Length: 116
Image (cartoon, rainbow, N blue to C red; front, side, top):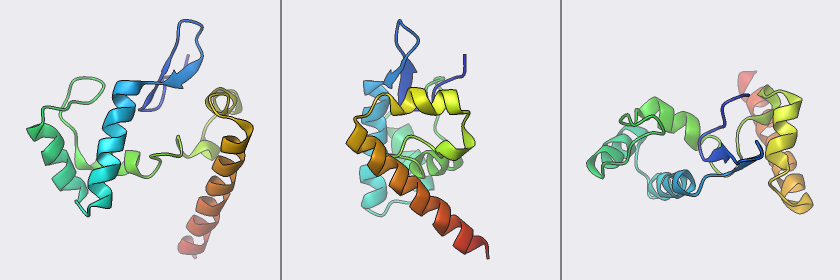
């Protein structure tokens, strides 16, 4: 079974569900970013507050940057196997899923424009 993205875990039935402690850390990261902190500053703040990664290590700014790119969006779903996509989307209502898909399409188009 594939490992879950940060902020999510598998329940006893093997379904992907939000992991509340990790969701709290994601919300904290998002708040810091919205206040204008750099990824390096965020890593230092997390270390100063003794907030560790899922594996018990200190946060690295590159990992925070990668996570911040999909905070609130789950992940770059178009890189994931379809069975994993279905599991992640099952957590959301139909309206949430439509919003998510529209946001992913927008991101994909922005990336394509930036690559030119």
